Image 1 (spheres, helix red, strand yellow):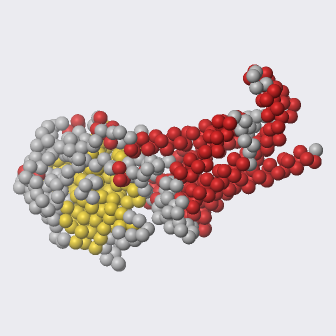
Image 2 (cartoon, helix red, strand yellow):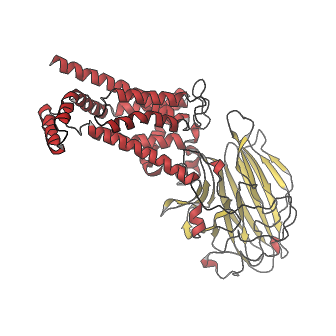
Image 3 (spheres, helix red, strand yellow):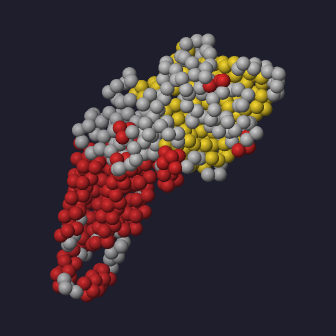
Length: 553
């Protein structure tokens, strides 16, 4: 019993330590990030800052080394306008300067349950910068994200009977090179197809590179949760390294520089992501930048492409901007589902998520689905739990004898340990018998924790009554109070520890955890409450059975 208490105390202490580390990571002392400044579309800058332009990759060194640092005639900044694009799921703006997506609102994802008409803004270029940029770089002239494009319309809308919507923009160089950048939007899709068609009407061959990049400012304190820590930052994917995080500290310390074939780059945050996906099979040079006073940059640049006079070439890419919906992500690109970050326990979390989604298809309520999934897990571990609770019940019967031994040998710990081992041997009790079943279940519980924390499907999902969003805290703190009560009952099912200090610490844990879990998403607290109630019922039945068997003997 003592060993089990130690393990339980250690496990709970680890949870508290992780919470404290999350707090320190988010709110501890850090160097102040450089302020983000982005030129407004309506206010032209007289001297454009080129620090956010990519350098050409090493294999393209034949192109002028000045590319990416010195503005060409294509980067003269003039007045631009915003083109509004409206689909059934996206409301966005494209700036004719650079032809880039500067704002994206997700129409089916409100900011909060009580503001259904205010969509979540994923991309924006004011204050909290996150924008998607693309362009071409060439010593012979090419449109980068400072160049001015022209458009035939000021607004585009996906009509009710259409499946796709095309938004073309055009740039024309002085030497006869024409670039048409086209965005293609699809109904009920967050995946945007982007192409850059280069027509070389000049008298000489044209050579240049395509680049795709994301700019993001470091998240502020108001974008972080007090007790829930999820990753916000850059991610790249390759066949060799698979899923790899590139956080802001990494970018500030050292620029990324790597050639990757059939990869992608993304900026991710809780529930949502934006990602550039080049054509499959193409090799791009991936890079990061941390320009002083400007947002962080994560992107990729292609190998040089030569286009003969009178010829043309088309770069094709994809841009995903939306929720971390695993079903959608699996159809977009290999490895993109990994942005739903379950950590080291992904191999366990993925099957749990699959089971949870199938339960929800039957029940139509994520709250009840969590309870049913918890019940299934308890049934799967029933035999292990039964062994643990039997061991605890047998130890409970020995409490009076153990207390006598402790009192008799209070001044001699060696003789006390020897006497207790003799007692265990005489009663055929393994003091560690209940520990292994508990340890085996811990990874499953942690994996389920991450499933409930990371799944966008639970965002703003209602349960019953007062709980209208399982991804936010219980507004009336009813579930945290129930959790504290169940923890207290579980303690009462076991005899108090002989050590007074340990008894006080264990007695305080329900209150400590009630406080911490008051700020946790209600879906997580619901899982904990359901698991605790089922554990209490199982432990009570097994304890009563053991006591009856002992009385009959």
